[in-house]
Image: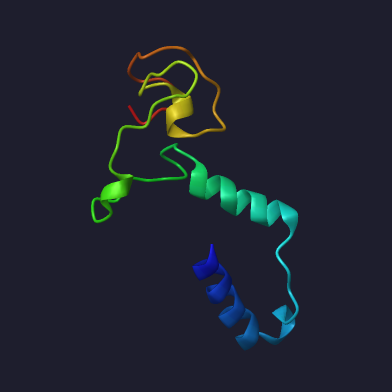
Length: 89
């Protein structure tokens, strides 16, 4: 988070209309959630970063093919069937 604050401070200093800009509570919560989220959408697999290479499972049903494992906004289907709408698998 400190690194993000440093980046934002540099951007704010170079763009006049953003001087004095403060992240809203919603933006802070969204950034926090993105850093903590487990789904494919928020944490895509990047083979150059070993901490991102793990199987995403739905926290409700535990299935990797559940659409909720792909995107936390999707509903849990409690199914591990292939070809479900909203699922990568």
